Length: 344
Image (cartoon, rainbow, N blue to C red; front, side):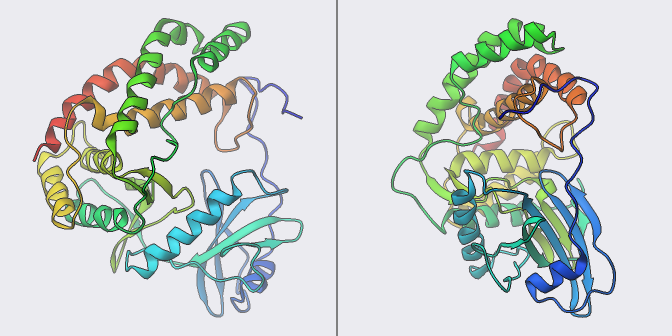
């Protein structure tokens, strides 16, 4: 049964009850807790810090209730995460639970499915961090772990059928959503973007299993150097399109435009480690624009009451969706210009 329609003043759905520190420590064999679980961050998943006699750990709740249909994808992501760790890519080491439900995840009765990791003392990435060489080398190593022979289905590329965009528009106008006039004005731009994004992915080649979320906010700066986190969405993608996306995003982080010198360093490190240069032009920014369409679609569905997402407040989603629709043509032009920095 679908959730009731979300109103623009509705608060996000409350979080389900949290387990005790003792429950998590017991499930993962982490020793006796010395304090309660401390909420750490909430984005797409709830996380907590756990301190026990054995040390400090990060705990993540994946979901509550029945397994979602994407659980097999998570199984494969966990396997790739383990392969990357074994290959020496610096990532938080997952803790093996005493009774795995699958991979490194376990069920805590009445509270959901959980993972635990070693705790890493860190700070977030800053725009002044020189991550060019690390980024290029890490992407190249990721892209050599599991090459694919066949073209996979594109994910997070915003390739929704035209009929779906028309349906969102009709529902948005019927509900008086803030973004509906902008969507009507720019629907042709969105459908055109979907067309060339699909063509770009089909022609890009270099298909691999990879991290798929190499973004500045998924890197921690620790005493041992940069650490790549959040591997749950790992899966098939195009190596050159992911490389182009990541190199430009990191170089533009905290800036109005990418740092050209950082792009050169990252691209040089990427090709030196065996990566293929992604090229330039509108096609190479397909992943970045496709991700924008994916996030836009999620916001449309949240405001229409079609999905429930605790990390998105409906009124904010309404406003941000309108902004993203209006910004799309300029975004494509700006990113296409930035792609010239990827020339070898």
